[in-house]
Structures are given as C-alpha cells and as structure tokens.
Amino acid sequence: MLTVSELAEAGNTSVHTVRYYLREGLISPSAQGDNHYRLFGMADVVRLRFIRSAKLLGFTLADIRQILEHAELGESPCADVRSIIQQRMQDIEARIREMQQLHARMAVALEKWEAMPDRTPDGNSICHLIESMNQGG
Figure 1 (cartoon, helix red, strand yellow):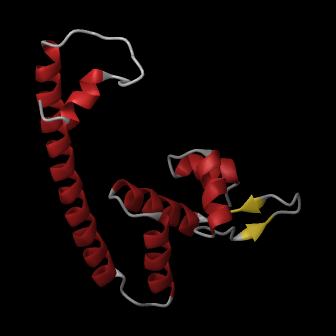
Figure 2 (cartoon, rainbow, N blue to C red; figure 1 turned 30 degrees about the vertical axis):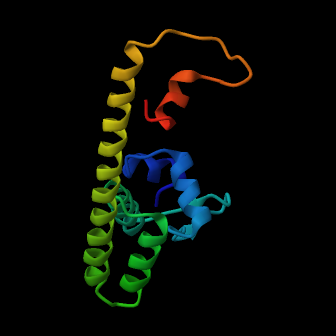
C-alpha cells in the first residue's frame, strides 16, 4: 500500500495534484492505515497515470470523470473518448484560426505604427496608436 506521497511519486506527479484529485473524487484511497493515512494500491497508480495521460491529451477533469464513470459501470468509454477528442480538435482549429487572424492584425498595426510618432494623452486620445486602428487610417 502507498501513501499520498508515494502515490504521487509512482504517478510522476505532485502531492498537491494527488490531493486535488482526491478532493475532486477522481481517486479514492483503497484503505486507511492505523495512523489514519490514506493508503493506495496499484490500481490507484494505474488510475492516476490514466488521469495524467488524459490531461495531456486535453481532456478536462469533467471529461475524465465521465470516462471513469463509464469504465466503473463496465461500459466502454471509447465512443465518448473519440467524440470528445473530435470536438476538442474542432475547438482548437477554430482557436488557431482566431489566433492567426489576431497575429495578422497585430502585424498590420505594428507596421503602421512604425511610422507614427509617440504622443502623450491629450484628453481626446489615450493612445493614438491603438485609436488609429479604429479610424481606418
């Protein structure tokens, strides 16, 4: 049986993360020692490693909870896993497009601003560089 710190080490994570997952109900101690320490078995190490792998793939804790619930009921979570990843990929692709558009706007602004002098705020303007982008010129 493993203590929280030993579980963290076996799962290649921090004690803080293990305690957080405990609070979130993603892992539970297999037993409690006479000293009231929470004790974990190898199944808990496997579960912790699964959670960490899922996090690295972009699954949220809510997603992981749903996957674990299916598994605990003896149901295959694979259909959900595929569906969640497909949706995450679509979301990421949309964010990438948004970031590329932002990058392009920033490049245009920077190029335009290179020729503009610095000015102090005058009551009608806070930063004429930013404000010039709304004026189209």
